[in-house]
Image (cartoon, rainbow, N blue to C red; front, side, top):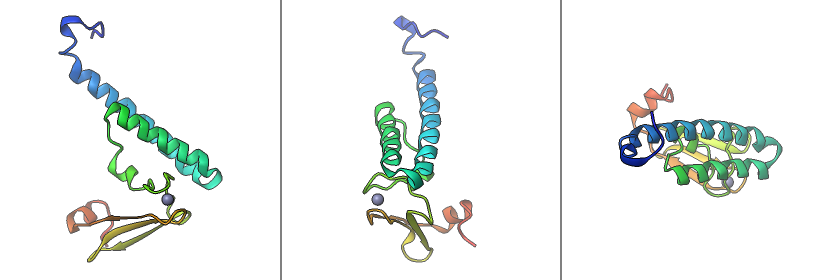
Amino acid sequence: MSFMGGKNARRNYGKTRAAVASVATERFQILLDQAKQMARKDEKLSQRYVSLARKISSRTKVRIPRESKMYLCKGCGLALVPGYNAKIRLHAHTTGIVISCLSCGAVKRYPVRAKIAASKGLAR
Ligand SMILES: [Zn+2]
């Protein structure tokens, strides 16, 4: 495998792209894990970890996994820890999953379809 560029650079694009994605995803996990732990001790640091993860995401064009993103506040950029700084309610037949940030009051809603709920172990 060559990263020297030149004529073959284009051919390696797919592989490089996958490598970037896997490194980025690894970084998200580390950063967001730290962000969650820090949410209890140091909100500023927690917000910094989240903003770093977002920066990596926008720079690499790799999306933060949906499940992780659910626990990031759009309002204040904190990592949300259910039962500590976030409230999670499941209204299966109406709004779906509702996550409220207890720090800034921002509310996120995720409509739930029965199939998704079942696969995530949320139904029953
Ligand atoms: Zn918030």
